[in-house]
Length: 267
Image 1 (spheres, one colour):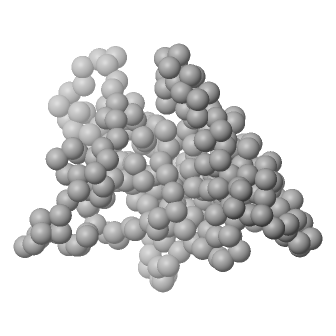
Image 2 (tube, one colour):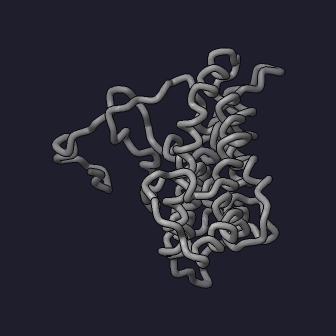
Image 3 (tube, rainbow, N blue to C red):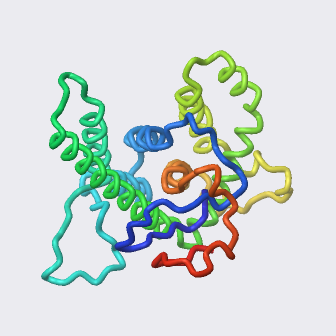
């Protein structure tokens, strides 16, 4: 959830190979899960800069951020400006996917090729948009005072998950849609816990009493914590979207890249 995001600029190698031994269930549509997280982020309240910036990044703000523009690029007057937000890219991808599934009539060969081309381009744009949005979220969470709060958010998140683990298992056992049930649980139970609990009461390792300044910071940062949790949830699910979980590709060894003709080495 807190690992740095890497974007391979202008590369067609958009999805990275599975870097670990774990292969997630193949029946989960991680793209749809990420879309749901983005949609639910619209409900984030608060006027702190983290909430405002995050909603702008995800396409829910008053001045939404262009998803395909890298802030680190030095733009020139000749550069073509792409005004699409992450939500625009999601809408285009869903429209292209629906076009592939359309069965009202049998499309001609040329129509099939055009739909496939539209889908391929929408998918590449979406992956680029998710990459760059993750990169911008990294910058949003990078300041030291924000990272301190990120640690608090992770502590509260796992404390709430540990305390509610059995309830979640029971709900999943009875559910016909495990992914939807899990997301509802995260947003209806875990998210409120993270934003309302006092960090000092959720960990036994902190035995000292905080001074007045820290106590005030806990209250002041409740809404900021909400934005941090949403940002981490986006990074969590985008990690699944941006990796290729072909079972034969897991735990790729460095030696397998010897003599590779790829434009980038990933180790």
